[in-house]
Length: 495
Image (cartoon, rainbow, N blue to C red; front, top):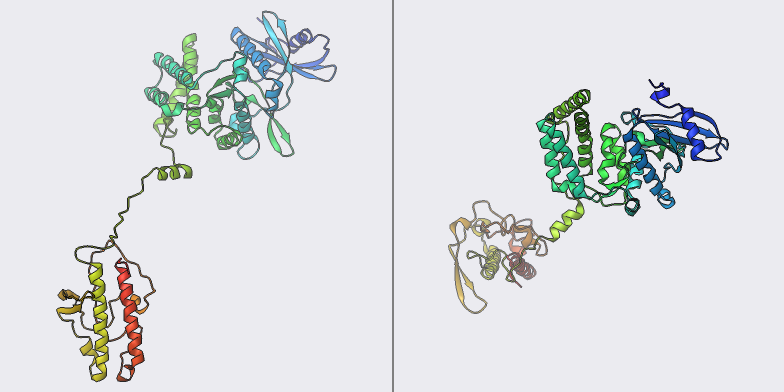
């Protein structure tokens, strides 16, 4: 039985330190310590202090799968050129050398300082959370040629969708996947809107423990990132699926990502990230089924049951695309594409069979002239009651062209007792001040009542005999003329 070393290591830190001298000829190790963290026993890691004060980290795989993963990380770290590293704004391990260690190979890299924070304990607000988002955005801004030139994995959006569909089929084949989750994930896989994204360089294996944090005067922030074995060109949401495990800080992580991104905003980034987070349970189920590990299968089923319960209770947002709210630019674009209504060249404001603008204007002028004559006659003993008597049923009117016409007034137009306004409540202001404007409802079809009055517009009381001098007559005649023009404009006729 192999000995048990600190943190579940199968190799001692001194054994790992010895491989450093093989990978770095001439190096002298003066101290070594365990470094294995969050590797689930898949790696043995140690930190070694060299004589020149340099710290290095050494890792060795515990099984064949971990060995392939470590080989992929070695290739990815070598692909990060000096120029690419300068764009990140944080540290990434640099490969210093490799050495054989039994049937495996140990990888020696420079040591990156910092501490890790579990997802559930990432604090909200400024500091760690937005710094993590900006770090992911920096990786996504790297040129895709960096990955392709290194021969690393590259998938199109359609290939990313196919991978999800394939995983779903394998999970359904276990006959342990809840039907509600199968329908939820299939609907997301079939929704074209979710997959219309721009593929980018992704870390691929991002998680909360991928980030190394250091404290500064301005606050804590990301100083380095570990775990580069999944470096590829793929869906950017892959690097954000773990954010679902940090509910308190998720909004700030996404805000930091949006602030650091240089690409067009992805409307369904959050939905795909949630989907990938949920599919981790499906991966665990498939993994246990393929290994014939009942304990892993039962654990996965328990996790899936909890997830389906939250989905059925509407505690999980939908994955399928919902109609996005239109922003200002989209609304303006939509309005610009709406055809404007055509406007007739003819003047149509209230020109109906019942109301002819020309005849109505002449009628207005005639009524005002009649009111003027009535007021003049008051000097001869006419009373206000006589002036306010109902208008006759017919009124002879002289046509400007020399013809005489007759306009019959509806009986309903006759003023009732006590009416003392010149042309009704709404027209009085217009008759008193021809320059005044009044609102007019073009949709109304009610007739306008024209009523004679015993009181001229603008007057505060009835005229007496002393008020009928020539100056008053001229002034009132001019007032009547202006009122006629105002009424003429009111009905839309051209002057």
